Amino acid sequence: MQIIIIEDEGKIANILKNGLLEESYNVDVAKDGEEALEKISINVYDFVILDLMIPKIDGLTVCKKIREKNTTVPILILTAKDDVADKIAGLDSGADDYVVKPFSFAEVSARIRALLRRGNKANPVVLTVADVSLNPATKTVTRNRKPISLTAREYALLEYFMHNANIMLSKTQLLEHVWDYQYEGLSNIVETYVKYIRKKLRISPQSKELIHTKRGIGYIMRE
Image (cartoon, rainbow, N blue to C red; front, side):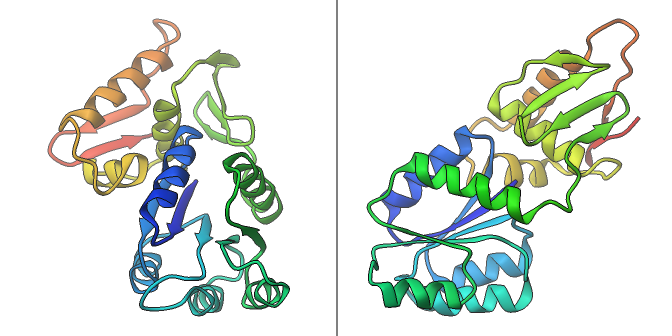
């Protein structure tokens, strides 16, 4: 799941981002309305967390513009504005839910799960490639019905591969969607995690390799 956080307060944005990354979501952050709309025009997001009091283009306007182009993506407003009139304005602008600051991350996480359950019923419940199955609802993975234990990052990488089965993915695409577009860690992090996943998917000597490398181009998951 790809989530965008539209929040100009760095501390709050980091709390949300770090918490969501730990729950295996892929996260982008926009610090103002202009940046948010630009990112949304380029990327496909499954969920939007939106502060109302953001620079350049205000949150209500951003919400309306998102809703004009996408009628289904869940939008959660997270703001210090707690008047009833503000809540009504936010919901009328197209938001699906409204949480007032200060907030509990646990509550925000629960509301995200609830809205995703409600808004994505058309999506397949279980992702399958060959004999590998991934259940986004329970965050479990099996191969030939045998459970496979993955770390949060390994799970996020495999989920992205399975969402894009039979599509060649570059190292840059994987870094942007599974880590972060500003990632500045080890340069071989993608190769390292692909190696981890391949090893865990190799449940027997007869297990077919599913993630293939095209040197100089990227990776593809296929039978």
